[in-house]
Length: 113
Image (tube, rainbow, N blue to C red):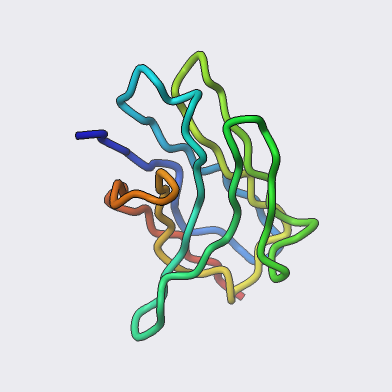
């Protein structure tokens, strides 16, 4: 069972930045395609950003130009750098090993206006 532990969430003012981290307990992390999702109460979980094992990235239109997904295979860690945050970015953010049921517990991001 792969364990994923997110960290780095918090409360920030609009226009601010946060960096989320996801530590993955797997010796083959480098082979995984990974993603960040987010969810607000009453809505479906949505894909925010994804990165393949080869480093190819893609983003939701709502975060393009503001968020950057990256990975450090030596540390088995996934990152999400979030800049120019908006109140509508407020959600619980989850990391995921793509095409699996392996999810972290989530980290809350709250952006105040």
